[in-house]
Length: 461
Image (cartoon, rainbow, N blue to C red; front, side, top):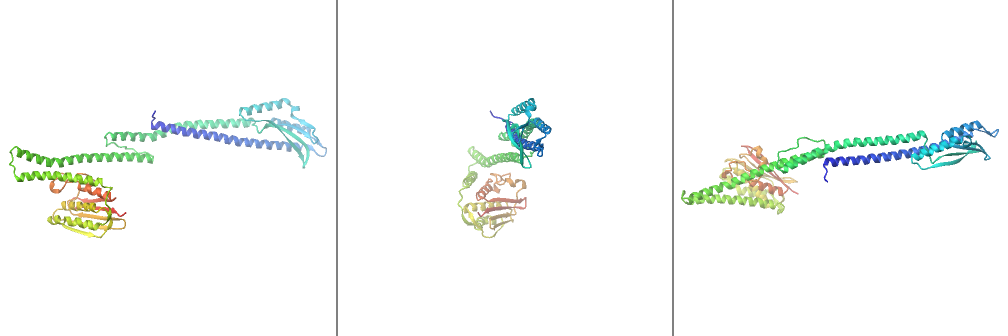
């Protein structure tokens, strides 16, 4: 049977509190009782020694006689304290006996103590100890003291132990009751955000990516869980939007050439258009466009599949930048662009062919989106920890809200998807994949109508 988190937490807290209170009560009771027993046992010994001292003062060494009246007083007080005395002189002759003076009281004391100790489940019985009575170091007699051993509780002691046990029981019950309330509240406080988070996670799994956990908790771990769920919902929502955008862009990329080819062929088949080399060439151009799109997709798939299989070797990043510069210099000249390359040599382990592809893609975009008469600057920087490749242009720039999206598949800032402005929007996706495979990152700064700066950073180790 599956229980809710709240029920399990409540039961767990109650179990822990119950065990803790029970152990605390038992141990407290044991230690206090044990300590009190030791105290009572010591008091019995002290009381016995006090009786012996009092009796020694009743002997007159000059007359060698005992004060019978005081012996009787001491003996009766001791009897009322549950001590039964028998006093002997130095020759062993009994001079006072509690049983002879009040047999009924002696039996009453013995019965009451026995019943009291039996009620407390204490093992023991009446024992007698003989003590010498001395005066100035000389033995003048002896006394036999009979009491319940190894210790006994008088009426006040018995009430104290009973009260103590009652207090411990009440405290334990009160702690248990409080733990039920506190445990329930605590379990509810913990379970509520978890339950709500689980509900939100279920809603997310069903496609509701706009749902969020709005409130916060006072528990750091629960806040982390809530934040993770909210971030997950945001990421999935963004991915869903990108997926829809990808579908739209892909459909647009395929529909445009297919529609052109289809309409041209249909017109020529029906005789509306005359079959001419120019019209055949136009159809061929659209077919080539479809081929280029498929080739771009194949390159992207290959890059992503080979991310962990880079052919790493020591190479100069400046040489990579120079190859990209040389490859696109002619196109820059055609557009009357000023293209420069500066920097320093920077040696690190990279996949040379892949990094050349990165540099060419970035420089190609700079040439493509920079108006005639513009400037393109390629720079290589080097330090102890990383190598930097910077491509800066004075082109049309990228709107700020679109900067996070430019590395997504088929995303283009040119919503018209004009063929004159380039490919299908896969180039930057390939660039990011290659850079990530080198454990590097790529950043972009851009301002509309003022240009863009792409910075590729590759760690050296």
